[in-house]
Length: 342
Length: 251
Image (tube, rainbow over all chains, first blue to last red; front, side, top):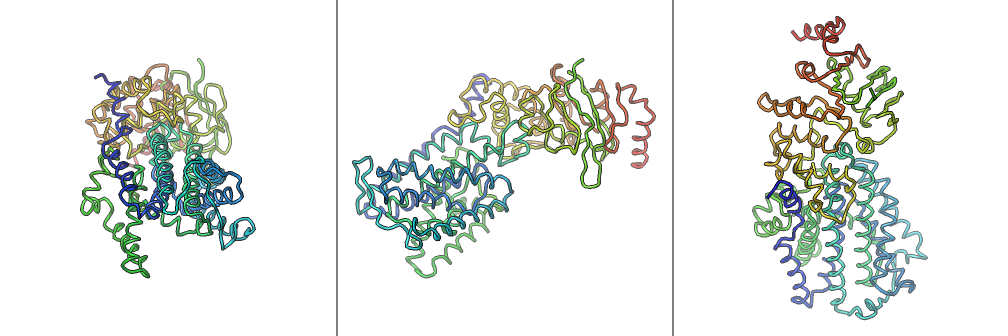
């Protein structure tokens, strides 16, 4: 093998599908058939996973921290709700796209504020935007329904063929299909020169500019795309639950998302998916054991994760999952969220 | 002779401190030009203005006759002005393969390509392989940069700058901090740069300067003290005073 083809081979190493990844998606699909009574929580996990993947794109790849990612989730949620409620776009997939685009427009517009600052500024700006939107949604109750939220949303069948059922089966497979398609797109993107340039910017913006990378333009692009993803996640929320209320913008939603990525890890796309599963499972577990104080236990788990370090936890407790993660990541070590990001 | 890089009356102040004073430099096409001066003379500040990291308070910068004073950093790179850093500026988590691959992709205009995967363009692969071989990085191309020995990182630092195929290359103390045993590799690489690449070398090491440069500018307190061929600069009593003065203090 000559040096050039050797380079090509190694450059594509990470982009290749690993057996572990195929297994992961097969297991997710199998869950849809294995637990027919648990569609609601499983759908909830899928939405959270998509939402977390969106944050991973900007945090794990481009290094943009955000405490206001719910802004885009909320815009997507309300957009989908309004489209369905007023019969503007009745077909769910099309409405999903339109809602995603609405969030994307907001993402593009606010990206200029976000790229200006460093981490702390970004936290404040993103947080501020989400709070602002929440207040606006409350103020313009004529459109949003105020604190009551949007009520009486009736979803039309998908492609006019598949109606949403009361057990949430359609909702689950619909969400899974959306998640998978967007995952494929993200996977393609992160292994492209564009995706690599984001990692370069995260690693060293000074050098990134010094090799000719238009840093700001790349950050704007990925922030806008992440907003689209988050908007889709929000729209899925409305479409599968048939409600949209003010809490789609809530700070807790953005903060939870950060926790999901702290649990799952960033920068390999599966972090958001695995984190979403573990986070919701923990939430379920703790709220069953102690309905009133489950947040205490979640908090404790997070403190433990941060203190011990996820790397070590993975080695000790999550030995087997970590084996799988390594398969997905295709690299030697799982990338952890830097302490400062967490 | 055509002028590759020129500054006209460059001025830079940090607060009340004049770090660059009315600096006018002309660097000829294909030259091996060295910019020397004692510590704190403002050499790196000049580089930072040339590359666009800092904006001068006044004065102009011309690359091959075109005014680039107001261009962003990445646009200057695409115009053919590339640099290395005195302290390595690399991507700790990326491998040499990825680091160089990215620089090559950007130059060839594939940097914004979000659909086609890395490693699927044979022209890009060929160039990466070529650079990795030239800079003795082929055997470590899949290691994370942060784990490489310092000498290898230094080579990568220069390789990245070369990957941008500069017509003007700014080398900011290329051999700084490199152990004696690995110095040879660096010097050989610097010495073997193609002649059509104009090089501006910022250096502390006088042996390296006098073996490499065909023209030397001496910077003192942000202003140009003198300029000329190496032997002339070496004999210059003012330069001797500056350096001997510094030496005397050091002793």
